[in-house]
Image 1 (cartoon, one colour):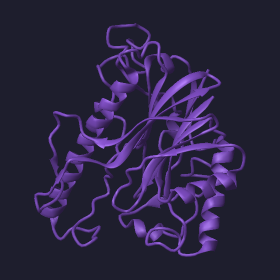
Image 2 (spheres, helix red, strand yellow; image 1 turned 120 degrees about the horizontal axis):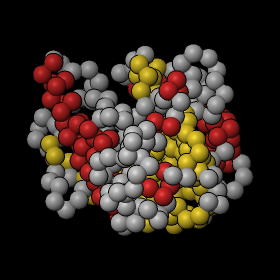
Image 3 (tube, helix red, strand yellow; image 1 turned 180 degrees about the vertical axis):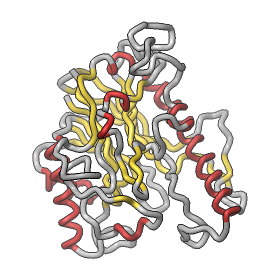
Length: 322
């Protein structure tokens, strides 16, 4: 089976403040997204940046075939949320934005306002795939893209830039901690015998401190001497599949001309030892800088410039499971 994650980039119906301006641009976007889903042919796909549930329904109708979908009931302030689409029925296990009980709210801006939960809900589902029962959590952590009071994307000075960079990091770290708590619930101390995956746009790279929070007990990473040696941490660990992705394709977004892997799949002990391959995109390169057959542009500081662009500014990340 194929398990993946993909940020769909502002999947809204036309006419709103964030979606395509007209029906033609919307249909072009749907066609571009559907082409990737068809080429990828996932059994289970975690999705991010779903604006309206109706827009996801439009996408699945464009793809065709039988799909099951679940969406978080906790969008962020501009209406985007996470979800899962699957070829097999889905049971929702959790839908939450809560921080763990002992984690206090964190400062969110210059006013001193505090964030007491994740900006977007985490969704956890269970499905029975051809490869057996699978538990999946999907997340979209706080963006590295900084925004400032008055809907600005550019700071007034370096002091403001540094402060808001810190606020974003506080929030992303707290969200990663909350996501790890949800993963603990799904693993239930039984990662050696339970297939669990955490999927999503984590908005940071493999070695970032926020991403590392999700791994659990240290040691045994893919590619290290400890990977094939069982130890007491295996029941609670998650393994990032990034080292299995070919080095020349180990990125899911291009940010100001720089390639970065910010979309991740982490798996339990039982699952990581059943992976046969991992990758980004669909495998049909269109040329330099494009990890799949779609146009894959470099994103810049102002996200509004891509409002009418087709497809997504992210590539899907996927694994094959025996």
